[in-house]
Length: 94
Image (cartoon, rainbow, N blue to C red; front, side, top):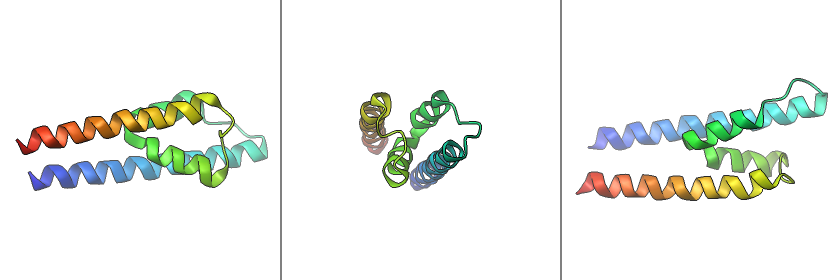
């Protein structure tokens, strides 16, 4: 059981670091006028568990903060993922 918790924690740490870095790269490319990371990719990473990393990147880099899809969508994705993870951990403990 502990191995499951460690693997889940490691996965969530990795995906959120990845999401944060994606926001940093996209902001850097936006400033330079380079090729951007598609919003669909950012949302996909958020659905994989990286919504906290995306939201942290939004606030630190002041990126995508005027996009309603991000300012409303990311907290909703994060909420539903937190509920899903809590339910899975409760179910696994039973």
